[in-house]
Length: 153
Image (cartoon, rainbow, N blue to C red; front, side):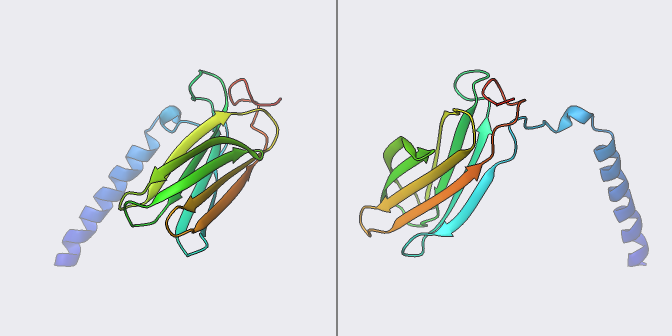
């Protein structure tokens, strides 16, 4: 008897989900005119995991100007660690600073103006106390033409 009650409930749930998915207007999911992100994961010289993500975006500080964004996470799970950070875009530093970890680690997000062409984005971090070094890099293709005013045609 229990089987007979569950089946109609599951069927009704599937029907409701199907209707909600098919009745959404085409604009419900915004398209990203600047393309998908690139990401890499790895470990520092003493085993601390990290993630580096980068992508082009046209909603930076100036409307319509394309930026290259970097999101760097160090998953230390230890609070109070001081890390020296350097972010580079095509091998030129655009952010240098320090960040102190929280219990969940470090999450630093920075951006710089896109200069055209392919992009090589990298992050370097060094733990001031332990000496651990973390290096990560990703490559992005040329920004698509529909990406702000900075994409190449």
